[in-house]
Image (tube, rainbow, N blue to C red; front, side, top):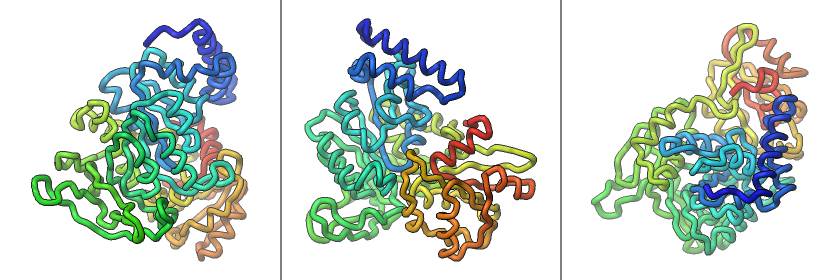
Length: 428
């Protein structure tokens, strides 16, 4: 990297000192406070730290922390990678990530959806990864169509290569102004936020298509599952032809070759994240045969999917922040196990819990369900209406103690999840 100006060097040094003090005093991992102090001293620091690096920015409503981790793991095959591993996904976190690995030639940064346009402009990142858009923290982020529109404006006229999920109409619309796009069929299990065309407002029809092998008429129509094709009924906006596709437990690459993923992270959502990561790695010049083994080494991400133990009770931690995230969490539940649910409504969660009514909790019928968290009564009412029997607990510790020794699944939203991690020493 080019040597930083003296002012920028001083800003990064003081930021790292503040981050270290934050960790030592137990106030946090330091990734936010360190970056904030650095930016006060040098407001242009993010631009300077990003200069001469090969950067990928990863943004989505769900899965961006995991996908960032997977891409980082793959690119470490090429060299050192700077990354915000624990999800500090606003400019302060980006400054901390880049300054803590100031000589890394590569960077993979998770970016909050709202901040993505600003970070694209500031860093000049060569690769942007867009995976999904659905309702989340509406009191902070606003209407998701507005986010997609901001993405379109930010990408227009930029020399940026985008890796985008073709199965999400809002992502497709947001990415379509980019100079270069690699379309990936990663799926879209949660469709409730994309039944209307963002181009004209008309209804979107969804219908199936099959994979056509390369070398035959219409080759490249790679769709998995087959109901992910979509098109507007009233205008020309429709699903672009993907060159990568998730096919059950495997990925089909642009040459039509099928690779079994065999990753350790559970569930369909993480297989979709892996396909996105492999497409991104190839955009950096890393072939799939070198990237895939590194993806297989990832076991957990910032505490997600970690199993913690107390008094013979083994609790697997799952994060679900919004309706789409709960759908993904349900996909990996063990139907034979009890489940503890914990919901808060602090600032990082969004204060409004009305989204609970968009989640279909009937899948939890027939198993023991325990409800904790600051907004446990909101969740309890929703479960009662869904006909799901449950028991209230004053705390997560009380809910865990009520279980028999053995395994239990835990689903929690963001701050509830972090509180549980703190109880177990922030397991990773």
